[in-house]
Length: 309
Ligand code: FAD
Image (cartoon, rainbow, N blue to C red; front, top):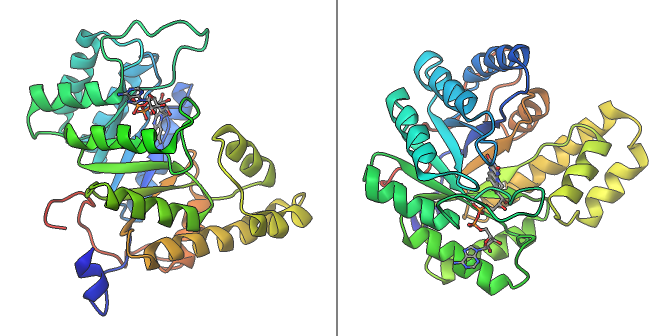
């Protein structure tokens, strides 16, 4: 960070893409094609989600293998521990290891939908992180989830930060956040993390805006605030998808630029929702890729959690 402030021309921000596991085999094939195309944008890494409880876990492992070994994308595998016995965790980690994957986003996962207690061997994400560190040493770079606007299961802000610090202390290398649209709140939150001694890279989760309905639904589902100027700009054009996408690109790009200018952020992580257009529009507007004809990267190529940064 000190370097970022003192350097007259800090390197352009880098970026990465999240994909979720599709429900059908045709969906998987379509996603491979999309990942192959998005490879040309030169993301620093991509990540693949894990369905809590282990549903379709072998598909996550297969996709990690294809992305890492066949498509040649630096890949991060999400792994949740809700309802997961240690044997299943080991199986997933060993398959990731064998695929050449070196990055795990270690998560608890949402509790079972029926309200029952998790039957897994790990209670919190921090227990999973400690287990991975103990058994795999430094092979995996370990990421953790964080919530700049709070987590639905915990009301006390200070406690949430304390729990995040615990995850860092047991061995996390980087943080990826929940989506948000309030840049000012996010920057203050980063200040608080630094004040309590969290020093690892903070990677903001960015959700581009494709349609008004999806924008509102996702914000509600994630329990995040929508700044008034987003509503003022989008509400009057809500029935025009093309206009919403254009204006949404402008708003999200401004937000990203503000994060970068704060000095806290060197890397942007995009929730692609397995689509490419809205993410590409934001990257183009931020000048992190060349406009459509050639998608050559302008930024650097270091993993955001590489120790030398
Ligand atoms: P934890 O850090 O373990 O926290 C869970 C809850 O317990 C929080 O309320 C926390 O405050 C509390 N807590 C933590 N430690 C303690 C303690 N010591 N004592 C008491 N309370 C404590 N879900 C999926 O199913 N699959 C995915 O692929 C996935 N990817 C995600 C990616 C990102 C970037 C993010 C932000 C979330 C993702 N999620 C995913 C959702 C995530 O699994 C849920 O939000 C889940 O409820 C919390 O997971 P966690 O790893 O943050 O849990």
